[in-house]
Each structure stands twice: as structure tokens, then as C-alpha cells.
Length: 459
Image (cartoon, rainbow, N blue to C red; front, side, top):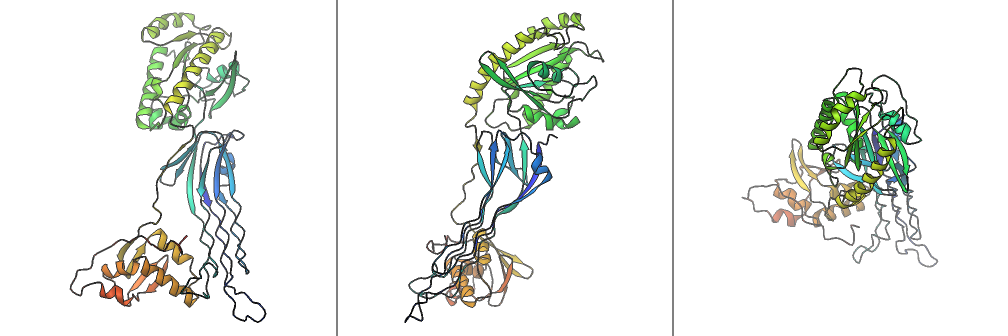
């Protein structure tokens, strides 16, 4: 069963909790803090592998999670990191987020990407000790791992793609040229998923893809055309297979014009980043089944050559023209590979989106009060043991140093208002300095954060 697109739910491992502990020695009843940090959670990692040819495994098991980090221990012992969950995907897999934005393109053997990052381990009280906080009686909790839905889309990496209408002989052709044994029958749409075959000619070895038949309107999705067309995006060479003896007595020249129109519509509607336009790639035309209707082949051959096409007349059944086709395909593959290398910025094109070291936050007014939105702030809250008064006081001091309280006051928050932070509701109790910073007659305005300068405490 060939599966080329799946939805995958990935979840990184939660970080281990830190621990609150103190050193106990003879004649030293109040030793220094020595609670260790928790280990980091494992990440879910996607790796392109030539040993995998389909996304079938993710179709049956769409939920994957990494191992969590272990908790810290006394004597400053750090918890073990969680084990990464490495998932093998076929070479040519494109990773998208739930909204369809491309995250990375695993177009090379061994290329990897982190699908879901593991959470950071919480600090023990030994790491929270400072010059002014000599004996902290609290620790941090482990950070939850990243959790999200992804879309994996496979685009075959073939050197040659066979393009044509249904039942023109593409499957028979790939069976003739290679050791592949696709399903072959005398009715349309016999091939419902792409087939790959390896062709060897002289010292050149290349991969040929048998793409299911296209119909007019395929670029707009008719007949699952877009699902099939994406498998020719990365082919170096296109071979248009035309039928000289179709049951409907179609004109091969009209068939070729229809195929070119579909490819043009598809390339105009699809971003082929790093790859040459489909119609700019080396191409051949094979007039197949010439043994059944040689007259049609003789009629259309001059017209196609006048249009600039390189045409080979042949028959898959009798073997006519197959050696010539194999030779020309090998020549064009060498040319196409060099062009693809020049056009593509890299075999593995990772989409980089720079993220600042500290995410900005914003303050939003809600019907019940105010809400602070920001990844950094949410992380502080979820890693705080809210049942520990000293830990809550530490969180409040971090919020004050990070400019959160001042931003709330500027947005109009007053003592006792309900503030939502990281999914929790708190009563607003700002520092006096923050209240004095706002003039009584000034109009409240929304504000964003200043970078947290506490680099020593916020890893």
C-alpha cells in the first residue's frame, strides 16, 4: 500500500523536575542546598532514509512521543535526559505544519529535522542559589515538551518521470526498461500510485517513475491529479508517452498539448523552490504502440519535431525504439542532474525562521481582566511549583524584572484585577514602584515586554 501524505501528531518528552535537598553532614545540621537539576526531555526527530519508501507506518500509527527526562536527585545529581524518538521517513519528504507552511524539506539521505522539541529540565535548588538567596526551599518543574500536528508529504526523487494519459503504456514501459513489475491491464487507471524502477545503461544508473495517468483538469485536482503531479516535481527529465492506437482514436498531438497545459498550470500554481520549472527541463516524446498504428506515427512525427520536440517512435510490446529511448534518457539524466545541482541551493533545504532569544509578550484585555500572552512567560509559569510560596514569590520577582507588571499597569490593570498567565488566573499585586511609574492622569495603553536580562537564571 503506497501512502504519500499523512497527518502526524508528535510530542516531545517532558523535562524532569528539579529537587529541593540540602547537604547533611556530621556537626553541620544546616548544610548548603544540593538539589540536582532534572534531565531534558527527548525530542521527536525525523530522518530521511533510503530504506523507507512510503509513509504507511505513520498512517497506521499517527501518534508519536519521545521519552521524558528523569527527575534530579540530592547531592547535585542531575536527572538523565530522555531518549529521542527517531522516525525514518522516505527521502523527498516535505514537512509542513498544521496550517500548510513548509518547515523543512528532507531531500537528501540522512537529512534530519526536529519535529517536536523536548522540554527543558527544571533546576534544583542548588542551581537557584544566589548571593541574596542562600538557601532556596523550592525547585523548578520540568517544562512540557512541544506538541503539535504535522503533515508529511512525500515527493518522489526520480531522475525520469513518465507522463501521459491513462492506458498509454507507461507501466508496460517501466516494466520493459527495469526490473519493476507494476500492475498492467487493458483498462484506464490501472496504476493508482506511482511506481519506481531502476534503469542501468552503460555506466549510468537512474530511477524512472511511472506516474498515474493524467486527465484534463488534473492541475486543479480532477482525478486526484495534484496528488500525482507532485511526484514529478523533482524529476530531472520528463518523458511524454503518447498513444498512437488509443481506443478513442485521440490525436497524439492534442494529447501532448493537453499534457503541457496541465504541467504549465501546475507549475504556475505550485512553488517549486530551488527547482527548475517543469517545462524548462529536458524532455522526450515517445510515440508508443507504433506497431499497432504506424500510419498515425508517421503523420504526427513531422509536426511534433517542427514544434521542437525530440521524438522517438517505438513500441513497448515489440521493443522497437527502446534501446534508443534508454540511451537518450541516460544522456538527459546526466544533463538534468547537473542543472538540478546548479538550480537547487542544497539537497536538504531547511526553512530557517530566526527566533529571538526571548520572545516578546503582549497584554490583552479580556472580559474578566487581562491576559499576558508570551511563550517565555508561559514557560516560567508552567515550570513553577505554585503550591510552594517561595516558588511563587520567585515567579513574581521574575515577572517584575521582565517588565510584565509594568506592562500590565500601563495597560490599565489595577490592584486585585484578574490576570491570566500560562493558563492560570492570578490576582494582580504589583510592586509599588510599578504603580508609581504610571502618572494618575495618564491614559492606559497596551505594551509589550522588555527583554529579560536575567540570563543567569533563565537558561
